[in-house]
Length: 322
Image (cartoon, rainbow, N blue to C red; front, side, top):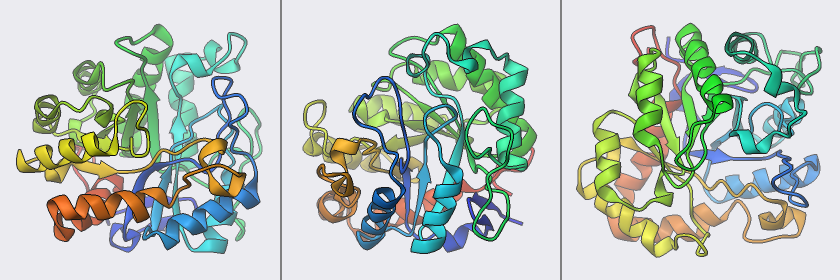
């Protein structure tokens, strides 16, 4: 049976509808002081805005130790009708202070944490023993495993995470997301994971669009990897125009089947419900019409539905969706 694991339970991938592959409803980090996402009512309002902009589902990509709130995710999903897939895993080392408890964990310990989140359920708060419960009293489980690396660097801490991600993936079949800094180290990450038993077609390279190089992206897609494009509304780094050019070139190059789209807004100062701009509706209301004008409605809908559903589906032991 084909399975997607959402916070309210397992689903057939076909019911996901349109999927935003990368957002955050809750997140706190010492790297982002003053930009905490920690208000359930405000985050719920943004979830409604996301739905009104045309999305039925989203992945909440906040990993362990950065303000995850599984019970609130489940309440928001239940009250709004937005399907939410939660993440386990660990972000890049810079997000965790020297005294953080995760720094003392081994590969095996991290892998066990990830597997427990995926199979048994996430804790109410990271570092606590009590399991989170949905409004119906069921455990709230993660549905994707996240790792991360820094700019042209994979530290010992980050390598430990990637090795644990691989163990958890092989044990469960859950899809993998890896945060890249400006798309550096993409081939190296895929090499490391592949050597540990993770097929490239199970991995999305988040923020791949931060390096708008179609040739590189076509190489990564040829290996089977998913390309996560989520840099809209960030003209200080790459403009929407550059991202549109990149996406069109990659589609023309034959890799439309490897694209995923998200917003990764991820800041209090960028959420309307928290008093910022432009909010979670930006992708659906302002960017996607431009992309449709470039590549057509059919391609965009395929990326948002078929591609996303394939990615979110848990794998069989041979690395392909069951």
